[in-house]
Structure formats: structure tokens, C-alpha cells
Image (cartoon, rainbow, N blue to C red; front, side, top):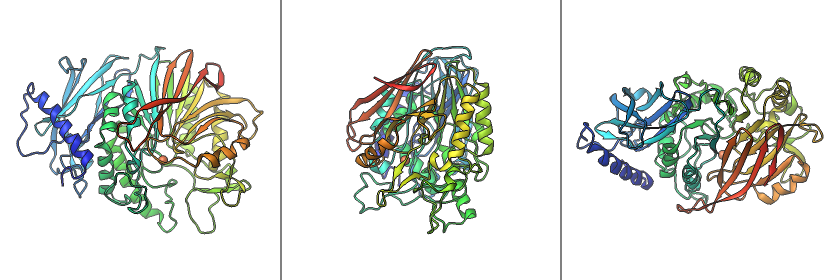
Length: 524
Ligand SMILES: [Fe+2]
């Protein structure tokens, strides 16, 4: 049924209003009887100095049971890029076919544009016009112009509204980073008391499940507003596939590798279909290249990592065989085993090379997880241990990465992450377990958009064991906005009043400055 979910209907109506306004000027008449196809909005991403990807997916019935969005035949889609918001000065245009192979998603790699300026774009298909999106090319290669950036993670539909996205959009960022858990594969039980707005379906497993999960999230007006406001760069965490999965291993040991790889292939395909990614990320079966670099003039190089696809199996697997993350005893030798990798050997080598060749003033490593070590206490046994699903389960890889930063004297390295549903500012030391060793890099982790944070009081109790943690707060949802200049990085932890309030307001929880040549954040 079309628009069976209220937020979807709200967006359909908004889209229709936009389409009607534009059809006055358009030679493309709306054909009667076809539902509005641009129910999922528009997006742009992966900008270069001369272009970016523009994205949409035609889905007149966004929640069609077969995951095809209410379409079957190929549909021609016109696209236009303009140098003005009113779309009167068209600088590029063309036509592509939206096909069932990619669920009628459209990815156009626009090139030949001017560096460091905004552009606007729009699609037409099935006699209708999409909303207009704003994008932006990156500055010329030698430019040191400042940038307004944002990063977000962990938006569980069932836990509330995406007000964090709306407020980040209002800051008019130049570029937004999605650091994982953009969707959640899993649904809460109806009687769990956790379902504020329902997914309307259970855990995603098949391609149609994942397609419809993305489609549902994409109907959210705040999510659409953020994508329409700025280009984005996306990487994933676990919930784009399954909680705590590692490479080809499901968290559930009863699911065989071959079966799980089929699920991963479906999940990766749906991820590609719904994100503004280049053709270099088109999945091949269960494999998809997502790690990549992005240069923002000479101001910053973004090293965008994939922390899930290539990692070694979860360490210290308990006797029951569960591959789910857990707090393992600090003495478990798997945690430190040098033959284990988080990024995979190829990505490790690629990252080392990216560090070696970087000429940027700032080097931002945009990835899914908390990088800093975290000595924890098991909540029941009170034994000291490490969380196996994060970087603490892959300590040797973390040491190699930080050693690479030191070896190449990388200019101003800053890690960004998500996954842990809380704000963190940490110092990353050369020897992660020795707080007296030099600080090599600065780390900021953003809270979730809606997902529940870890217990604040329990985490505050372990902070004395972790003196390299400069700030922690898990009590509020939000996002991170960053004002980046050659001479300063200003990081703002923004919090919303309540994820259950669609009109939630925003405030600043805490701000930090990082100065060039001096790793470690300064609290304001
Ligand atoms: Fe999450």
C-alpha cells in the first residue's frame, strides 16, 4: 500500500507541492494515475573539485512488499544541475535509465563544474519533478579555505525522530559525514516498550527487507532535509547488515558463513542503492569497496574507513560460540594478537600510503568506532576487560595505525567515530596502554541521532581507569559540527532536547579546539 506509514505520506504531499510548483515551468507534464515517484528525496555526495554524485531513487510505492518501490520497467530520468537555487541557470544536464537492477536508484557522477562553490540539482521522471537539492564542489587542490563540517551516526527509526539531522541541516554545512548505523537491520519487539515509531517489519535479511528499511528511513523529512542541504560522505558500521557482524561471520554462530554472505550481499546492494556513491562502490556479490579518500583543497584530507568488511573474526569467543561483542578479560591474548586486523591487510596498506602521501594541513580519519582503548569492568563480575567488537578487540591494528601516523609525521591527525551512542573526546597515545607516552592524535566521537546511550553512571565509574578520556557523556542524542580553518579546528557537541519530540530544539553541550602542531583537544 502506498503511503501506509504516516511520515511517508507527509513527505509524499510535500514532494507533490514541490512538483506542482515546478511543473508550471516544465515541459514534462505530470501523467495522471501515477503516484509521485520521488518519495525518498534526493542526495549528493563524494564531492571533487569539479563535481559530485547526485542521487535519487524512484519509488512511487516506497514500501511495496517486493522491495521494488512500485515499479518494474526501466524509467528514463532527466537530471539538471544549476548554478542558482531557482534552477534557472542550467550548467549540466542529461538523461539516465533507472532500472530494476538497482531498484530504480539513480547515481549520476556530475563533472566539469567549478571548484569550491554551491550548485543545485533536480530530477524529472514519470512526469514529475524531484525536490531541489543543494550540493557543493570541494575547493581547488591548493586552497586553504575554511569549511563547515558535520558528522552523525546511529539513527534508529523506532527510537524517535531525526531532529539531529534537521538541526545539522540548519547549520548549512559544506559537507556531512554519515559514520554508520544509518539504518537498523533489527526491530524491537512490539511489547519491549522501546518502539516509539515502528519499522512495521522484523529483522532485515533479504534484499527486499533491506530495500524497504532504507526506503522507510528515507521518507523521514529531517533526513531528506539534511541530504538536500549538503553533499555527504558515508561509511557503514554493523547495523547496515547485522549487529556486531565481523566480515563473513554473523553474530549468531548458527548462521553458516555461506548463508551470512548472502545476507551481506543483499545488505551491501541496498546500501549502494540508497547512498550517493560513485560507480567504484557498485557491489560485486558480497563485496563492496567503500573505503576511500577525499581531499578538501589543502585544508583537509579525509581518510574514510570500512571497519566491518575485512576484519578478523571477533576475538575471545566465549564457550557458547556467540560472536556478539562482549567485555572479554584483559588477559585474553586474542585482543593483542598481531595476526589480527580490523581493516584488512589491503586497507591497512592503503591507509599507510594515504598517510605517507598526504599534503593536507588536517588529516581526518572518518570511521565507525571509538578508537581509544577503554578499560571496562564487567557489569556483573566487575572484572576488568575490553569490549571485543571495537578497536580494543583489534589492538595490534590500532598500534600499527598510530605507528604509521608517527612514522610519516602526519600533519594534525584527528579521528572521528560513532557506534557507541555517546560523546567522547580522547587523547590517542603512541603506546595506547601508556598514558605517559606522547599524544599522537586527537579523537572525537559523536552521540547517536536517536539510539539509546550506554549507562552514564556505570561508564563514569570506569573513567578513573581511563585517564586519556577527556570528555564523556551518553545522556543526550545529537550530532557534531566542526568549523575547520588552517589555524584551528573547533568541534561542537550538539544535543537535542528529546528524540520523541518532532520539534526538539538544539543546544551545545561542549566545545573543543584543536590547534595545529599539538595533538589533544582543548576544552572551551
Ligand atoms: Fe548504533
